[in-house]
Structures are given as C-alpha cells and as structure tokens.
Image: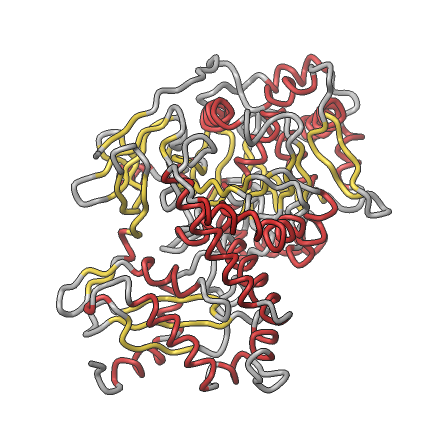
Length: 604
C-alpha cells in the first residue's frame, strides 16, 4: 500500500475553537473533575470543570484589562504544572496566541522564541524564569515585550484582580473572536537541525484532531472517569495535545514536574492511562529487570518477560497455545501484577510517542496487561498523524491514520501527511513552508512503509540515513534502538557517513550503573568515566552491539565503538527537551573520538 486516507468522523462548525471544550464540560450537570493538584498536605484535590472555567475566565479578563489584544502572542515558560494549562486556556479565551517555551531554555533560546514570534508578554513560573526572560529581552532588545507575570507568588492573583471590571459580554466577544482557521499557538521545533522554526497550529488542528481522536479512543482510553498524570513537558506538542484532548473528553489530569518522584506519584494518583516517550518505558523495564536480578530472581523475571512477549505475539496472531496461556496466568500472579501495582494498579493503556518504541517493549507491556498505543507525529502535525488503538493495533507499527488524516509514501520512501493534523505553516517563513509541502502533502522527513492493512512502520529519518564510503545506505535507528534497550546503556549514536565502516558512540546509564555494577562485583562508587574503561562494562556493551548486529547485514553492522565518559543530556546540549539526540552537536563535540575510531586499525 502506498497511500491511505481515513475519512473524518467529526466535522466541527468553522466558528468553533478550543475554548468550547471548556464550556462543553462546564455545562454538564455532572460537572466532571478536569484537573487534580496537590494541596499543602500533599493530598490530591480535584478541580471541577466549573471551577476551572471560572478561573480561566478570571485570568483572561485580567489579560484583557492589561492590554492583551486578539492575535497577540504570549509566552508560557514553566515546568509541567496545573497553572500551565490554566493560563494556556486563559490566553485562548482572550483571543490571543500562546507560545510555549521550555523552562530549561537558555537566554539565547528564549530570545529566539520571543523575538521571532513577536511576543508581547510572558507568563512564567518563577523569579528564576523571569530573570532568564529579562536577560533575553535585554540582550536582543525585545522592545515589543511589555509584561512578565509569574505563576508563583501573587502574579496570577494580580491578573484576577485587574480583570474584575471586565464584563462577561466583553470576554465572550474575545473568546469567540477566533474560529477554526485562526492560529492557536506557535510551537517551536526542537532545533535538532538548525534554528527552531515556529509551527503555527490552528484551533482547527486542536479541535478537529481531538474530536476525531475521541471518536475512536473515548470508549476504551479517554473519557469522563479516566485520568492521567502528566510528567512530560507541556511545552512539547505531544503533552500539549493530550492535555487539550483530556479537556475535550472530560478526563482528569494531574501534574508532576519531577520524574524522580514519578513512581510515588503514580501510586498516589492511580492513573488509568499514561503518556510517555520510549525512554521512560525502557527505564521501567530495565529497572524491573535489575531489581529482580538483585533480589536473586533474575531468571524468573527473564522467563516472565519472554512469556509476556510470546503471549502478546500469539494474541495478536489470534491463537494462544494452552501451555503458553497457563504460564502467562502463573506469571501474572508472580510478576505482572506487581509491575502494574508499581504504576498505581489502574493503568490499562499507555500512549507512546516522540520516538520509536520497538517491537520487543511493545509486546512486553501488552503481555503484562498494560497496552501501549504507539503513535507517530511531529510538531508540525499537532502530534498524532497515526496511532494504534485498542481495537485496531499492530505492535511494531505506529498505527493507522486517525480519522481526518492521510498518509502517503513517496517514491523515495519519505512519509507524507495530509489532514486535520497538519499545521498552517512556519511563522514568518513562507519560504520554509513552501519547501515543507509537495502537492499539498507535508513532507515529514521520516521514511517508512504502509502494510496492506494501512498500518505505518517507521524505518528511519531521511536526513539521518548514513551513506558509507562504499555507498552502502544504513538506517541508524535500527541498531540504536536495540542497543539502547540494554540496561547499562543510556544513549547510542551510530555513525559512519562517508566513512569506511559503521561505528557507534555509546553512553552509560548513570542511574542503573550502581545496581548493575554491584551485581557484577564492580568497585562501589564507580563513576561513569571509570566504568567507560572497565573491561566488564566494555564487554557488556560489546555483547549488546553483537546482538543488534545480527539484525543487519555485515556491511551495516557496527565494527567499532567507544563508550564516552559522560551521558548525552539536555544540559550538555546533546538532547532536546523531548530526549531526542542532537546528532549534529554530538558529532561536532566528539569529533576527536570519531577520528580515533577511524584512524585505528580498520576492523575486519
């Protein structure tokens, strides 16, 4: 199959916008809880739809009283917290456009986003964020930027007070000023390949994509009564879209800004579904495996994991042998139930995006009773173009298009997209917008294939395809995903463009190292830099690479590697906030290591 279109199930009035989702829930007699937040005693307290609507209106009135006009751009710079969504909807209620900024951004990054978008104000979390914003405004002479309000302290209360004289009628005029065709937000790309570009996502993108996703997901995943805890950055399109979708569907959302406490938060909040990037699921699996090994139950866990994967595969094929079913039932009592309990005991579905999950992990979690619905999309597509769903899932793929979306495979294998998800264009860059489309189709930059049932499989990133000196094309993700799945490995970057053979840079998982090392009698307190040279660690990484090499041809296999002495992180400049590796930056910063690989004796 080369092309598939799934007709929209819902078509909304052109006058509608995202604010109508809040009104929809607030008008319900049931008055569902849309959010929950911790109080001073660390207890989760629900916020009803009516309460949320009232507070959104109060802050929106304050923005109007402060001079915010229809179409003005307002930045939001904060960690993942309830107030993020509160001010996001308040901005939309004023008819303005929100511009998310990662709270970890440097002054130069903040200056680019605010300056390029022409933002007139920012709502930030804390004084430290305000300091970064002020530095950015001063360094780039951002004279358009007038106001900075803080979520902490009395910043939002000041807005509530300022708007007391704004009438309901005046607010309603502003709330309804935008329709589906108008821009709702400008989200900047992560900048893995140059300057971030401002993607103009419209109310149409959020409204139509949410309505059509609910048409196929509401029954099993997202509806009134379901709940999730948000820990991904809301500045990223994936978390942002799910947050809007939850309001549209009447699901309850809690927030936690620090994933170091995620396990406790999952157990106290008890979500029915979660969303995460693949690295989170890898860490859950690896942590469970290491704990079992440390408790002397490594063989039991390994057998349980194998059984879960085999059970999931057999279920997908439609026939589970009796003996396999019996083994699965036994491990459900011994192992799987404990894993589900560790995540709160109520999680039935997880949505994975932001990168490839891998078939092994997909089948493992499906096999333990937590179905992962892997999807695919970009900032430019408001997140999901395609997604697996409970009644139509094929693990190892990223699903079929959501209703209202289309996917086409170009002659060179590039994935093209069209439909309700696709952005209006890049802000202020008609030239880049024109380059991004061909005959009305958005060029994703990824390569993939459609099977005969319309399920999409991602096989690589077009710009990341490696062409060796001998002309062999190599897709790095095929190897990287398998190696990164090893418990001791954090990141893997396959290299070899215009080189005589394929090699890799590997980083170690600092969190997993102490327990992993203890079980192998390595010295206590071994640092990552020391571990990178340890023969036992090097042998373990070699084993993971050897295993991955069995899935590719000899010409595509990794012939040499180096373990670098520190991890790739957002702070080091090697990861985006959504945990994607900045390939160009890594290659630049580790040029000397690469030269060492390729000046050493050529491997066989």
